[in-house]
Length: 269
Image (cartoon, rainbow, N blue to C red; front, side, top):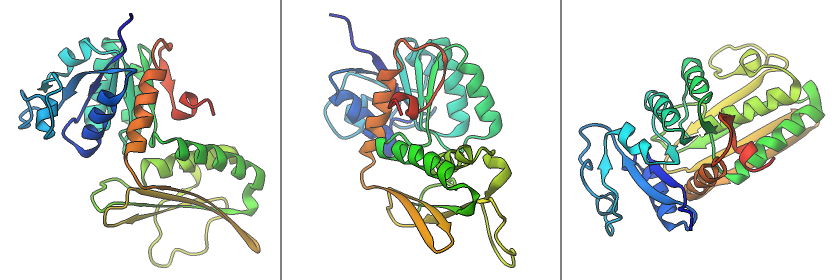
């Protein structure tokens, strides 16, 4: 029988990393072949299952990405922009599918990732959940149907430890709305209002970020027109939805041609 794809999890000690380890080891469609952490991390050299407080999984945590990726068919990466860019190059060398859930990427980061995608498949999304990607598709359609007679505002809420704003998901939604209107988000985004800002700029797509407590993720897309409002909403209550989506993306990417893909591609939307 042909072996199932081997997956490496980066940032294995983090909340998302541990959830991904559990999701991969619970799946019959893939195998955990590597767990990566930064140099000097106390988990280095330990079995990842035991480090997580459970049974041994036979996978030792390492800080050697090149060695870990060499045995993998996919890498799932929810870390930080600088690390993700480095991992993209190494995953491309290994011809492994690189699934990127990292947010806060700059234009320079995205250019480096695009260069790596010339050599191997990369699936990148600000949010890996099925529901959110359906929301993205709906946002594009509604923005296209309503036109500029409706103002668009995107409101997102996350836990108090989130370090970037707007969220990657909010930006995905903004990109979808802009695409529906046939404009570039960078030309119409309004990402901060404070003081005497004046009237709302016609055609702008506004963003607001809420941070507090242990909110997993909430996203509202508001279309406000004369005499009526339409609100599209997604509420996440369990981070496992992101892990499930990431594993699905890693499996979908097997045998795909090099290039950049999104969860819209994975889900056939």
